[in-house]
Image (cartoon, rainbow, N blue to C red; front, side):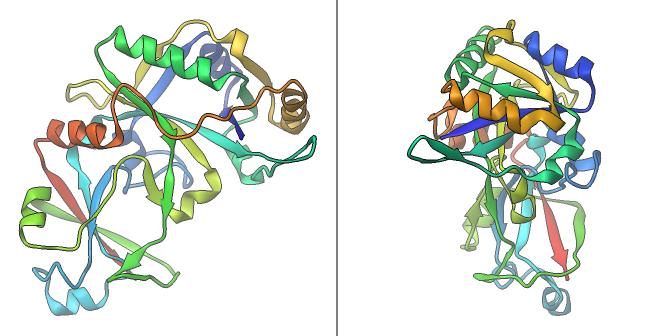
Length: 277
């Protein structure tokens, strides 16, 4: 059981959301912009390869790696996303218990609480089918940094992008590397305090601009409040049984299908990132 909530930095953004206009930045934006908790160059990594397998790198370079090599699909720059905070609920008798991460307040002072997630998903899917796009909604999974099958030690990191050289998944697989597959619903565990649930939109063309998906007025399934009053409003929603049991991923495509769509949109190219510790 859970409740989805969305933070906004301005009241006008909240009003637009309630009117059904879902403003979705691209992953290209989050590769290069936003504050620390938003910016993530590893959004859209489609696979990781152990350092010991990818022996094309010099030995002295391999020796300073703090994590396996990350391969980010170029096509994911065209993926539009909208992110929510998922409040997990535990029920003991008639009492619900939950924890709110106080650091989420940096995402805005205004909050929208989704009071009917199933209906919200239905309206998103209907709007997307009318545009001939593809959409997928669901939980983000968080993974620790790994190096050669072992969780890497914590510490400061430097991220290096391999400029001027592209790789295909087929090429990496053909060399027998121990690939771990990923997609836009996988993120580094340093972001796990965000408990993210997201909408990912595929529009089928190479455009990294933000996009506004109009799903129709949402005022009947949204409760609005200030972030300072979020706990009281969540408690009121729980008393009215306004929580969700929806689990898994929902939309017009599966995770593997969506991943392949973006991979092919980027001409099957990936960019290599290494992590130096």
